[in-house]
Length: 419
Ligand code: IMP
Image (cartoon, rainbow, N blue to C red):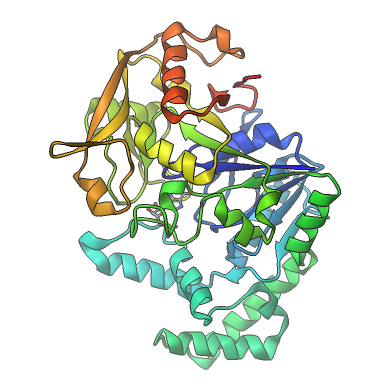
């Protein structure tokens, strides 16, 4: 029996989906355990582009079963659209998708609240994806929310919907309520073939010896508790979130692969010590196509931050590293890695617990020579230019974990696997 967790270890968008796709070949089951349609996992396969928001990207392998576990918040309308679009591309969902009946629902009201909160917050906005994620998780915790299973109990659903609108002091006319109720019930019927108790299923398959891949969404530094609060998402993105989000014992996660970009990006607001504001940042953004898959927003770009990276590796119990988008750095005269933070005359190699302290730090950099050679055709480590290898070695040394996977391009085959 064995399972692997593939986790984004910075502020999201580390190209986790590509790593899930590479490892997915051996997986019987791919499980999403947190987040919702705020995620935008992009995979390029034979020139085709697939963007996944709620569906685990393992769906591209015809034999793999994909699970949306109870820790995920589900917008049934977005989900149906996603399924329909993928079906049009020839992907079959029959007996291949399971959704936990306890997953909390993201309702249109949650999107409205998310958008309204952001719009009225001015300078204090979080920079959310406006997908209703925060309000949906909040309602779940407040026990005012609705769950997928509620779609199969019409009177209860109606009552809960009315209560929810009252709780948020939002008006809904009887006609609007009936329309929403009917739409939700229809969506529930469309999804009913997939709805079950997924935790039991995952545990049994693990014990039967199947290969399970847990696919993280967002990134460690966006974790609701351990990220740069309040500039975070509303779920636990760290490895610990797998146990609660998928309903499995901690010991069923056998290996953790931490996914890092060869540089850093962040979307939304919040401190970002190594952010590059000038030409190099713009170049990385264009070269790396650093625009949000969900919102299209330009991502903020910066140098690799080994202080933040080590913190996330430790908190996740990372076993091996995957370094992605290395090819994006090709052509830069020099490349930098942040090795410590300075606050005034205080030097620290520790990542601070709060956003104020992080906003106050100045990075200390290790500057290394860049490389010019196009690396997108490299399939073996030894084929990489010397300077690129030295850069990777510096990253592995600073994090004190070995690199297992290097991605040098967006296609599945543009990958170097280390033994
Ligand atoms: P929310 O998850 O939409 O509430 O947004 C909260 C924060 O998480 C914002 O800074 C978003 O930009 C960020 N975020 C949410 N999903 C992703 C993602 O998939 N990649 C990167 N950042 C994300």
